[in-house]
Image 1 (cartoon, one colour):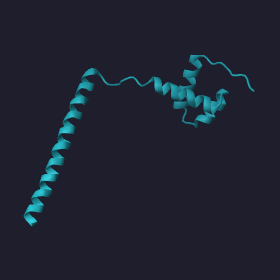
Image 2 (tube, rainbow, N blue to C red):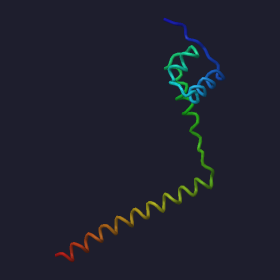
Image 3 (cartoon, one colour):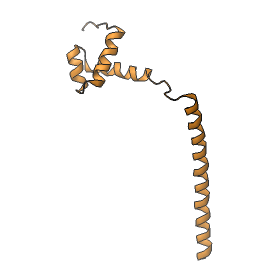
Length: 94
């Protein structure tokens, strides 16, 4: 069984950045760096998971919540109008 190599955080960060901007397949970048493709993929996944910070400001978040509430209202209103229209059509044909 092979010995597991230890890489510092700086090397990992540079490897992830290189893989993202290289314009080449990840497995080739990994081979050039002397690491496995699986290792680089895991580092990239961990880096992506740590970047899940909220990119929205507080005011943008508030506006988003307001817009979502308005959307729920309009969707509900549209459904009511659809049902009312179907009822009126049925009544006028019957």
